[in-house]
Image 1 (tube, rainbow, N blue to C red):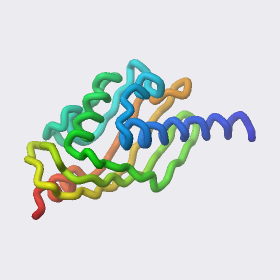
Image 2 (image 1 turned 120 degrees about the vertical axis):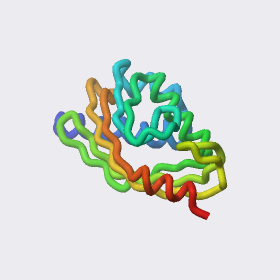
Image 3 (image 1 turned 30 degrees about the vertical axis):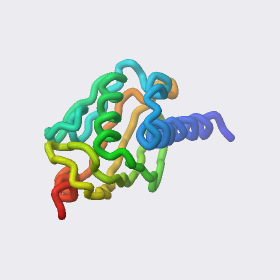
Length: 149
């Protein structure tokens, strides 16, 4: 395997850890290992699960708050990676997340509704750590699924 291919595979492995260890399993201690201190995420939903349509999550502590908000609202949340593509210092992931709402989220009281949303995350890595990321998913569809039933 060439050094370039190995670097791309290592970067893809970091993103897999983000989804599997941090988001699916809630291992927030991994954040210090795989994210830079200056990490910034531009994504739908406030770091605390608030109602802003798009917001910045800044730093490792901001990411811990964001992951906690999602895992509190959806304790059974599970992200499935549909595809992972790497080029240079960028990794793109097409994902689907599914979970049952058991806590408040986006201003909606828990009703036990199951959400199933697809999205895309594009991350830039520096020295095998995630430094910045952009995530898009249909927050309107998420709100619709939360309010259904």
